[in-house]
Length: 392
Ligand SMILES: [Zn+2]
Image 1 (tube, rainbow, N blue to C red):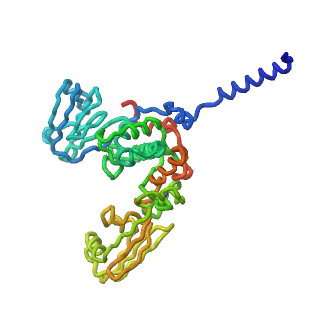
Image 2: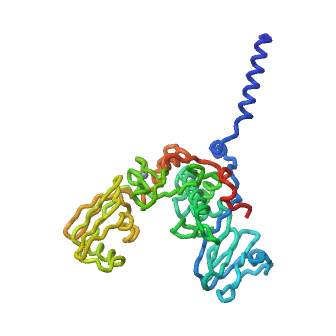
Image 3: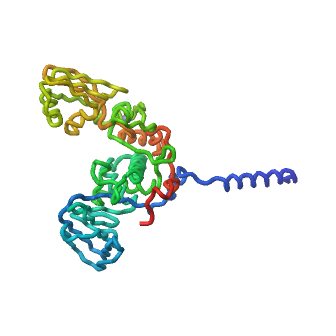
């Protein structure tokens, strides 16, 4: 076939347009993540309060270790110590321990990164300074089942990373960003790391969720029981626009989807007595609800009336007793029978729902955008440098 001159010109124009479109497109973080490319920096670091109020700290390492006195940045030791013991009365200054092969054991906990020992009010505070992703390796196994579908694990990794950045920006403490307990996210070093959870962290490296360009407070919970909770009905004073209720039909297979528990009046009285010393015999309990969840409780007793939030009422008992505030109560002669739905505060991502969504072929973007409304999933590179700690 012989192509006419106008046809060749048209083809050239077409090729030029295609080239221009290709040059004009910067690959999105979504595209890069799907193709397995790195999407953000992974040298941001975080300071985790690993142990607090210690009198004695034992540091063990099999590699060369540098000990730096941070006040004047002086190396006070450089060698292979194997084991070092510190007592509070012999620790006048903050010391930082740096090893070269990423293995350091502090009071039996093996961690990556560096260790700082700080003398604070007569006790030693142990802070683990490490890369964000290495921190998340040690968090995920405690927050989600490592055998779940990878997209659910990736959603969890992004939620945990976002939660960490939120606290890095918020925390006013001068020497740590968050602690290793359930106050924030549970972190126990390298002991429980798994290949799948590490892979979820690596393949979402640098990806976080933002609302109005700020990392969100990415709450998550086990099972919502059919509808997630609006944060303003769970915690007084909070009303974050991305933490609104959503109907979730995905967590029906959770073992915590439905539950029943009996609570006797004696149990309620004993729990109240810890906080309210003048509580008398309980006469009536009235539940107030918002958005299907018990948001406030009025307890009339022989010596007066106690009003409290549903969450405070739930927290008076051990964690497994009242699994969520999503329950209906039937009054009996001796107490209450609660018929409930889900486990946890119900705010943000429902993990059993995320598992089911991933099983149905949804990716972690779909999961996060379903549970956190109005958010954007972006690279950490979009966050102003002043909010980040880089170059460990
Ligand atoms: Zn759910």
